[in-house]
Length: 507
Image (cartoon, rainbow, N blue to C red; front, top):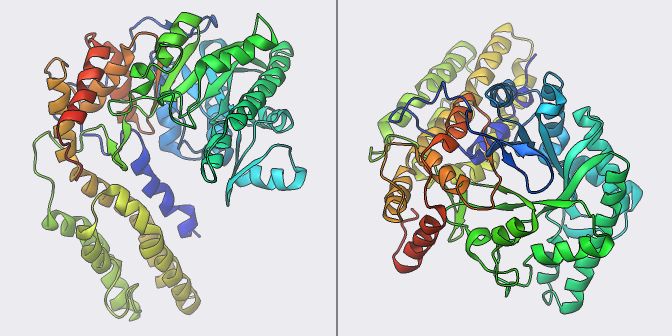
């Protein structure tokens, strides 16, 4: 019999972190039949060539049919770069990638994965093996780039993806060493030297993996490549190259990855590498550049999703729309109360529907819903179901009702997420207006496509990695490079200037 664990509510709530979460398509040009026609781009001097939009596997989960269908759709349309990591969904992201990739010619795809995080299964591994140089960042989150740990990670990644070779292997956010130091007195000069020593030793090990034919190229994925040089935890592309060159002139350090979007454009604008930006420096040195989080921007301590949730300018749905969403849940709960005289989740004849009708209007955003749902909705719901199972478990009416209820709950949570994200259209409308003012040609394209199109046309950028776990998100994303070229650097500069000179609505 199904249990709530069979339909994990948290997986539904995490859907809001998808790059395209809530994306609205009805107003815009047809996207369902978008096929890739653009030429592939060189990934630095690796000899690899990729489509400008890559498939980001951050929340991809083996066993999820939607995720599998989305990945297959991306590959069937001609996309060819898959970016994953050992820690994404605790290895299940790599497992799904491997499950799908076996149905496609290996030479047609570029597989990028990463290592460094110690969480989940890796935490048990680290506690058993006591790897050297582990950064114990916080409870449940450690980090390590020591060769002994990386060796285990590469083998596990190969096994999960059923591959003999990884095309590109990246150290995953090694700056945890520096940010952990910030928790204390802040990283001192000696800490920076130790950081790059660790990076160098990781590179030395990765060169042996290249020699063995286990990986093709290596590099670093860092959230801090675009930071000002004055930031203590800034990661320097130029210093990473220095460390690789110190090992051998024909090194295989050839790829970096960093966040980039309209709000976080330091990689394209911040001259933090001997007078050059990270993109400029990498372009000069033949380093391939992948960027992540193109549609999830952090600004003023808030997540801003660069997507449309309803038709631009349309008023968000109100209380009556919420009641309509909750009506099927209310009806099925009343059925239980009538048939078994069972107390509902909130006591008596008050169930989950009534609780949600009270709390959802008070929530500020889908992110707020995600943060409170686990403790205030899902946990009490699990407890109530367990109590009812104890009391009514042998009653066939309860068993049938329970199955119907579980099938209803997770899609309903998705509906609530969409209801709340619709309220974020005001922010999306302002982003669109500022984007046009910054020099983006006025058009009726989706905000997500325009935001990605800006990145696609940045000089020195090879691939925009986008989380697209649904078919409609794939169709929207792969169409971005088909849009007319734009003056990306000027648009980013003007957009950033608008944030500095006038207030941006964030609520």
